[in-house]
Image (cartoon, rainbow, N blue to C red; front, top):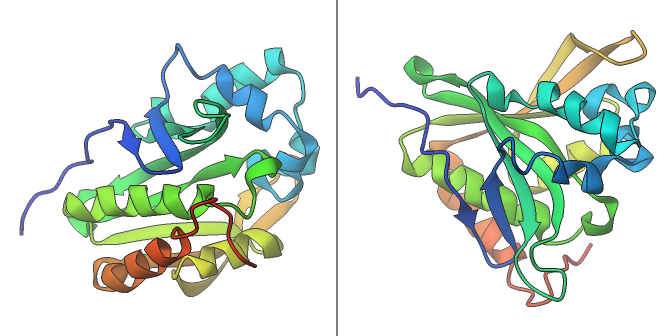
Length: 210
C-alpha cells in the first residue's frame, strides 16, 4: 500500500478566498472575525456557554482550541476579492490524520456571520478537499453538533454523505454532552462533489441562491 503523508501546509488560493496557514504572527486576527456571540451560538468552541468576545481572552483560547499545535493544519480564511480583500473572516482546519486509513477530518470551522450563505464556505471546502485528494487521501470526515441544523444543512449541501450520529461525542462548555452528526466525502465521491461546488461558485458576486 502506498504510504501517504499530510499534504503540504501551504497557502491555498481561490477566486473568493485565500486560506493562509495559521502562525504565531497571524492567529490574533481570528478574534476580529470570531469573537462574537453568533460564532458560538451553533456549537463552535463548546457552544454559547463558551462565548468569548474579548480579543485579549479569545486569542490565547483559540491557540489551544485549534489543532495547529497538535499536528493539524489550521488556516485563516481571508477574502480574496472586492473592497474587503485581505480581511480575515474565519478559520478552518484539517487534522486527525490517519495515513494507514488515508483518512482525516476537516473541522474547527467558523466564519463571521456576515459571510454565511456566500461563496466562502463552498470555496473553502473545494480548496481543502481538492488539496487532500490530490495528495492521496481517500476519506474526509466532516461533523457538526447534531442539534445545529444550519451547520448540518451546510455540510449536506456540499455533497457529503451523512453517516449517522455519534452519541455523547464531545463535552460542551456548559458541561453537557453533544451528539455529533457525522458526514464524509470519499475519493470516489470527489468528481460529483467537486462539480457541485464549482457550480455553486459560478455566481460572480460570490453569493449563493438559497
